Amino acid sequence: MPVWFAFGAGLFLPLMFWVCRWQGWPFWLCGLVLLPLAWPRRAGGGAAVAAVMPRAARWLPGALAAAIGAVALAFRDGVPLQYYSVLSSLFFLGVFAGSLMQEQSIVERLARRLEPEFPEFAVRYTRRVTQAWCGFFVLNTAMTLLCIEAGEEAWALYNGFISYLLMGFMFAGEWLIRRRVKRRGHDAAGPVLRETPHV
Image 1: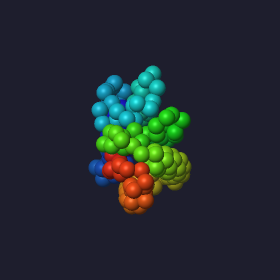
Image 2: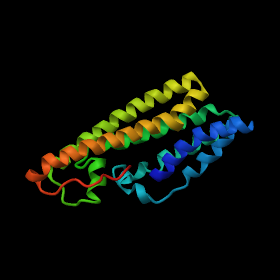
Image 3: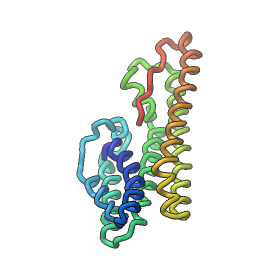
Image 4: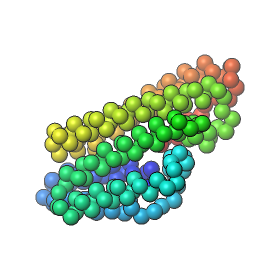
């Protein structure tokens, strides 16, 4: 399941909730959006993400997403679709947390695609950034579950807007902190960190 497709579906479903509400369509029809995720794909832009997952498990997120869509269609119920946001958040939590158990964290792998010569201070920094993203996905999962309990409107508002706004704050905050880390570590460690690609 390509990373861009996962994020796109995660944003598309809450937006489609409002479209369905506006048009008077049943929300469960949006289960069709998740069915194609079961189809095997090359990692593409998510190659670094795929690299930290066991090969045998790379099909599992897409299969679970498609199963959620199939359940929504079979029972004509939109509630299962809300749990796709939970699945997405847990998937990325697993990828980021799992990479901390390896020699290179996921953020370091992404950064090394632009800067192969990686100083020690950058390795430590990217590990801390990976830990911060783990914390974000834990909180995001908890908030999504709370919003599901609060009702469809709360779920659609949080997962279609607020969670992405918070993610933007995370990227912006990390960018500001990274500039300070660069300035402090450049003289002692040589090459500086370049822009870390978005996940």
